[in-house]
Image (cartoon, rainbow, N blue to C red; front, top):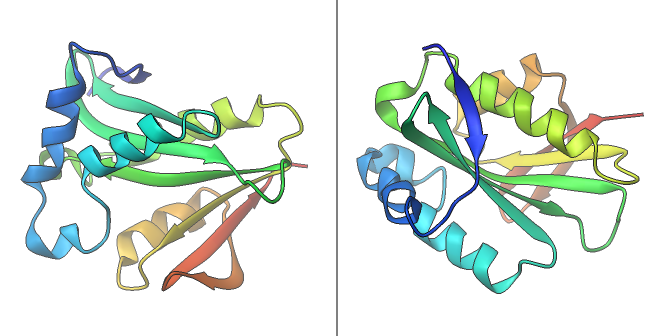
Length: 151
């Protein structure tokens, strides 16, 4: 794995990125919405959301949806992170998260980045803790909310 990058989603790659979710096991599908649903979320709320495809060299391997908190303009959310099963456990998620965090740090007035996950997703919890996210004690829609303070 040489070059992990975040790229724009466009009419040439959107179908491939959407179909990556079809590779997830039944167990993993409980942890993250289908990429096609996330892309629809983005399509209908482009004022507050952003999305990127995750690539290794020229191979699409994942998806991320992010957005500004509608109640607090100093907080951004990493709403969805999906890595295709064949690329999990190989540092792709970590590298993608580091790039997303670096990108969001540059947003005007960004003071915190929040992320939430299903309590049973121990891998996500471990990754987020390693990246410096802390448990906020909040639970939203059954998911644990972690925060990375930027200031």
